[in-house]
Amino acid sequence: MIIKNSEYAVSAVREDQYPKDDFPEIALAGRSNVGKSSLINTILNRKNLARTSSQPGKTQTLNFYRVNEDFYLVDVPGYGYAKVSQKKRQEFGEMIQDYLETRANLKGLIILIDSRHEPTQDDIAMYSYAQYLDLPILVVCTKIDKIKKSQVNKVYSNLKKHLDLDHDNITVLTFSSVTKFHVEEVRNWIEDHLE
Ligand code: GDP
Image 1 (cartoon, rainbow, N blue to C red):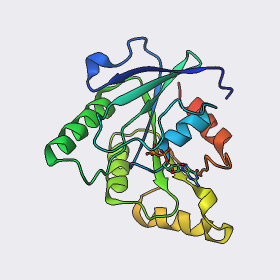
Image 2 (image 1 turned 90 degrees about the vertical axis):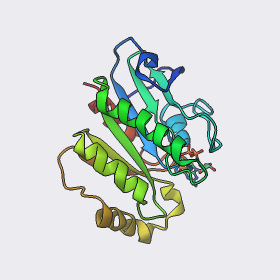
Image 3 (image 1 turned 135 degrees about the vertical axis):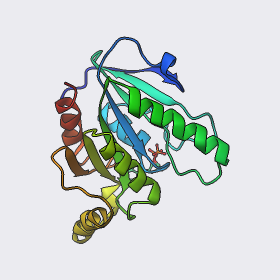
C-alpha cells in the first residue's frame, strides 16, 4: 500500500465524538512504551504525527488519524499504567470496550507486544477480548532490532505459550521502527483488512 497522505483527525472518549465520514478503521493497542507511536509514524512515513513516549496520567483518548482520505488508524491509549487510580482504569477500560464492541467501521485490531518480553497479563487480556469479539488480529512483536537473530524463535515461542494463535484471522509479524523491518507487511495487512 502506498501512503499518499495522513493527518490527525480527532480525539474521542465517546461515540458522538468518533468521525462521521464512515471510513473503515484499524485500531492499534498495546501497553505504554511498546512502540505504538513509533509504529504509527513509521507506517505513515511521518516523524511526529503520533506522539512518542507520551506521559502516563495525561488525558487518555482514542486518536483518529485519517490516511489517504480513505481509512483511519485509531490509536488506542496504552494500557498497563501502574500509577493510574482504579477509577481511571475503569473509565479507560469502558472507553476502549465501548469503541471495540460497538464500532461497525472497525475492521481489525493490531496488538503490539514487546519482543523482549513475554506477553503481559494486559496483553493476554486484550488478545482474548479481541478474539471473543471475532476481530481480525495482527500481533506485532515490536523492537525486533533489539533481539539477536538466534533468539527470534524464542519471541514466537513466548507468544505461543500465552496466546492461542491457531486461527484463520490471526497474523503475527515481527517489526522494527528503527530498521523498518516488515513495515510494508504491516501496511499490506492493513490494506487487506479495509473491506
Ligand atoms: P508508545 O508508548 O507505545 O507509543 O511507545 P513509543 O513509540 O513512544 O516508544 C517507546 C520507546 O521505545 C521510545 O524510546 C522509542 O524510541 C523506543 N522504540 C520504539 N520502537 C522501537 C523499535 O522498533 N526499536 C527500538 N530499538 N526502539 C524503539
